[in-house]
Amino acid sequence: DVLHAYNREVMRRDMAGSVSSTVLVASKGQQVEIGGGYVLQEIQPPPRYFGHTIRELDIGAETGVQVILLRKRVPGGGSQVRVPTANDRIDEGDRLVVAGTKNAVEAMDVS
Image (tube, rainbow, N blue to C red; front, side, top):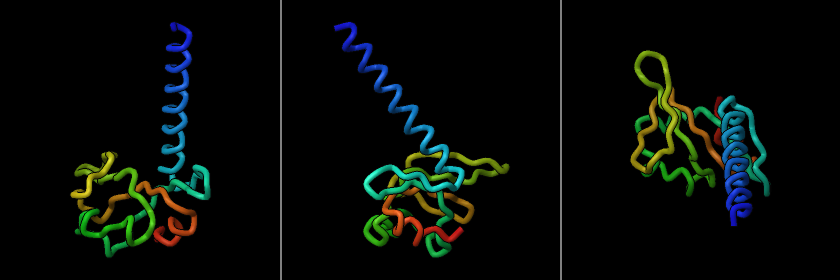
């Protein structure tokens, strides 16, 4: 039982580290292959998204791309990264970490 619990914890930590490093690479604007023809990438949202919530835009239905993380610009020059909700508004200067097919993500990326 102890070995089983240990192995489960090691696998959990390995997976968390792998996801964390994948998001880090994607946040530098590089496209990361996540399998099955899907990629993860941080992009600049199209200007037509500014001032609208994720719910209003219905990004997933419109583009086939899912918004995984939202990097909000904060006063003073920094940024805050979080998992967005449907009610999060996209503003100029924000960045989106998105996942979808390579073609769909590239069609969204205007940066």
